[in-house]
Image (tube, rainbow, N blue to C red; front, side, top):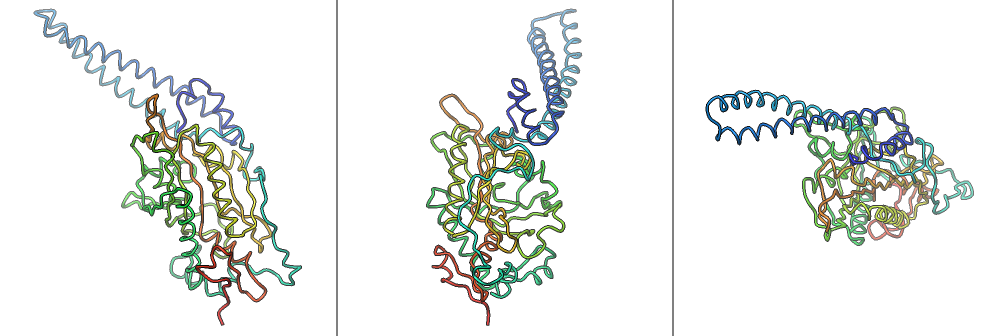
Length: 422
């Protein structure tokens, strides 16, 4: 949730953000009116409540007709206080409902526009020229089947489309990636975490995933719980309703969890293999820090993601995501996209987002400093989304005979080469 003071002091800043995101500016005018109505309702309630308290103090001293008049007025005020309180609650709820429709204020450094308006910040590595090597690259599914690593047919039989089994070296590859990613994160100062994959509505709403992404979230209605699409959700809610000490910050957590996404609206997209699926495992970095430090921490998270992709020896590029393609919580997001040879293009494998105070205001997470308490800033970054990383590793490391060379960082777990089944 954005700071209400910005709405009162600089509403044009919100309008600019909405315009750059390609969202409606009308909600800002509605919010201004709702805030005025809310403050008027608060003032009205406090006025009648104050009069009620004053009369309450006079009654014990009054006698006769004066006391009777005061008691009659007190009765009238009691009804007015009740009505004023109800009006205040209704006005506040209307304001809160509108506030939750407004995404975080996009950074002016984020490119303006939609999904295709990103800016490439850097390109690392050179995609292999398979034609020069004398063979046509196979896609990850064909390679995975040759290696006995991926079984989508039985995944569909057991669970439906966009599900899969990782088998043999496929399962070993994910376990190796998990171990390596969690070890790297610990080296960088992150506390390893295995968070729950089911959360209450307050956690999902507090992180902004019921704003723009509600259709992609799995809900267990009978239990009133949600399956997380990323461990960002439980890690963000971990310190909900807490006051952190400034000396504790930054708090860095690396969470490993399954992630579940309905992929609503993706019908017909990436239907082959395991690139876009309903369930995958992921190692996610999450940081609590101060607003002032959040911008430098954002760059650090991106640096760790780049170091990870460098260790995996993958060609990739870094893009600055356009404002219209940001999630509700982020002011700015960097994506790392690995080269996928069978598709002849770069595809997202990780992202790093600065959510400033948006999530902590909703989740009531504050930091105590010399000047009192203030909302913390939160940031998140994918270290390793397993299925997409496996796709990139198989396709970029493939050899003409269907074997796959592993990067040096994974060789202690898997050996130098994964070979097709006989």
